[in-house]
Amino acid sequence: MTAARSSSARPSSNWSPPGWSLRRRLLGQLLLVFAGLAVLLYLSVQAVAGRAADATQDNILGASAIAIAEQVRVVEGSITVDLPYAALEMLGLAGEDRVFYRIADGKGAVVTGYEDLPAGTAPASEEAPLFFTAVYRGDTVRVATARRSILASGARQTVLITVAQTREAHGALTTSIALSAAAVGGGFLALAGLLAWIAIARALKPVQEIERAIAARASDDFSTLETAAPREILPLVDAINDFVERLRLTLDTSQQFIAEAAHRIRTPLAALKAQAEVSLKAGPEKTSEESLRRMLRAADETSQLTTQLLTQAMVAYRAERAERQRLSLASLARTAARDLEVAAEMRGIDFRMDLAEGVDIQGDEIALLEAIRNLLDNAIKYGPPDDFVQITVKADPAPEIAIADHGPGIPRKDRDLVFERFRRGAVDPRSLGSGLGLSIVRQVMLTHRGRVRLENNEPQGLVVRLIFPPIRETAGDRE
Image (cartoon, rainbow, N blue to C red):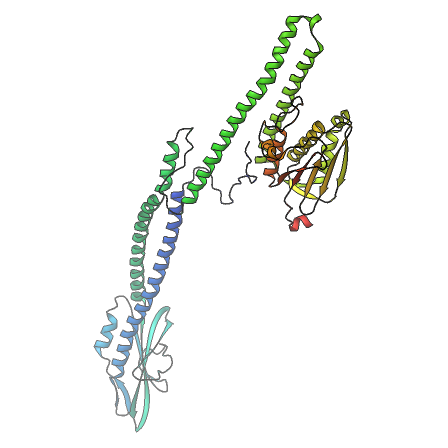
């Protein structure tokens, strides 16, 4: 099987339930933004309308106060005023609004008008009335106060003219303008929603084209997806093409693996069947020991090949799904050696260990043990009897486990071939072997981002080194 990526896909934190619509989600978010803008428009227009209505009312009140101030006279030493009809008429145009006025001298004595009407402070200039808002007789009124200086009894006196008006018309005008703005904002929101729906539909058209292109494909079509996608969609297209290519390679590898496995298993089974038929025809009295040995060898080959095939399938499966954990190389070496003690004793082989403690790696324990057991099994199988196998673990310059034997070794010209499935080096053809051991080792090291190195063991033999990347320390590891 091909080496698979170690990282598994995890759902995003922004996961949405099945059946949710991207189009509706985008439209909802845009409408929410548009609604916020419409509310902001309404509030802005309302504020501007209020200021405009204030300015209009102030202009009328100020003009009325100045017009009344111009009619202030001194008659026989007393202040009199002839209220101009036009001044009050300007204020009376405001519908239901009520008008109040007050004329008083500088000492506060009321000449005419409403005595309790607040006058405020005297303005600094006779040409510029003073404006303020007050509450009078339960109503909110806008007040304008103008100042006029006159000569009375040989002395200069100040007269304050105060004109006030209720604000019903002001509120009605402000509300009317604000409602008009709200209507415009609502129309804008509806139009923007329609245009947004059309724009979103056009923007999502490339995604729909990709969907149709994939749906129209045959199940055995693994060609590259070609589409004129916009820049934002290209990563999705690349990811789909990458996935399709990996799927194609996985299926091709699986089909090739199944075909080779069927062929390899069929051969020893056929030999076993033929030998059994020969022995059966010869009868029990003529069945030779050599025939039984051949049958036993064929059975052993079949058993070993089946075990190795299942092991390789297991390693490929765990490469996709197994969780990585912190492991000690020394502990892995001891466990693997203990599992093969019986096989080593049958050939009189000892395990000599030089294991540095504290050499840790990140990996899958089951797959790594299988790789180390395969190397130890090869060392026992091809090494001379009554000998030893050296197992070494060290940390410098990188975490490494090395297994050395004194067998025939592997010629340099064959060191790349022996990592392929069902390929064996120049070994005794009578020795049992499936040609899968080193292939499994290489696959395990690829999934662990490590390397396998084959070296000569002087004066004779082979050294296999498994070199791993160092663990990247994190705060959680140090604790």
